[in-house]
Structure formats: structure tokens, C-alpha cells
Amino acid sequence: MIRRAGDRSWRRWSVRIGAAAAMAAALAYLPQGMLGGGGDQLDRVRRELGHARRESEELRARNAELRRAIRALRSDPGAIEDIARRELGMVRPGELILRVEPAPGAPAEAP
Image (cartoon, rainbow, N blue to C red; front, side, top):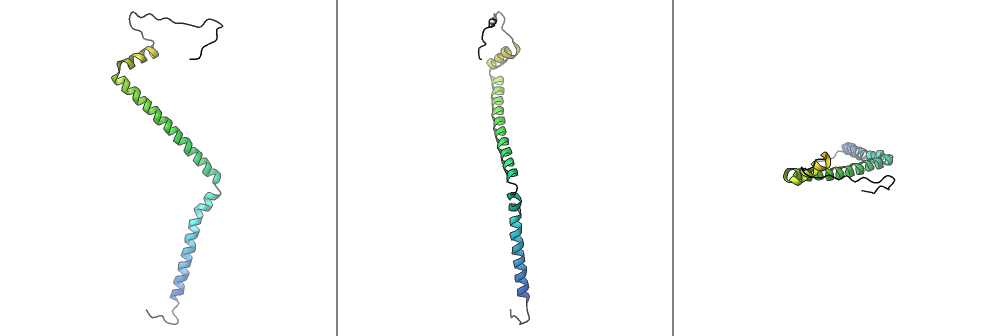
């Protein structure tokens, strides 16, 4: 390509490239500038995320516990008996129930 003395297209392209680079730098800085002033909000979101993760782990542990209980109820007759005795107050025929209550004024024992 032979450049003529009056051809200034290279200058136009260099100005365009410079403007595009400046615009790209401004767009790259924009999110940082927006978050830079919102440090409190970022800290709050991080705390909420930590809380949500802890709650999620607690729920996973509770679900695992419930799955174990379901498996036991499906396969272990003793588990069914324990629940019937504890929650429904059921007894076998011929069993004698002795209820021991603390004497009036006696300190209560911790379970």
C-alpha cells in the first residue's frame, strides 16, 4: 500500500483506537468504583452469605438425621416401639408403670 501525502486515514484510525482504549478503561473502572463506595453493603452481603451457608449445613445435618430415623423405622421394630412408648405413652400388656415425682420443695434435677 502506497501512502499519499494527503492521506490521513491512519490518523483517524489511531484516534479511534485511542478512544476505544479509553472507553474500555472507563468501563473496566466503573464496577470497581461502584463497589468501592459500597464496602458496607459488600460486608453485609458476605455476612448474609455466611449465615446462609451455616443454615444450609444445619439443614443438611437435620435431613441426614431424619433419613437415619426413616431407615430405622422401616427396618427396626425396636425403633417403632421406642417412639410408641415415648410419644404415645403405650405399654405392653402386663407391664407396671411407676411414676416417680419429686417431693414438694425438693430441688429439680437436670435431665
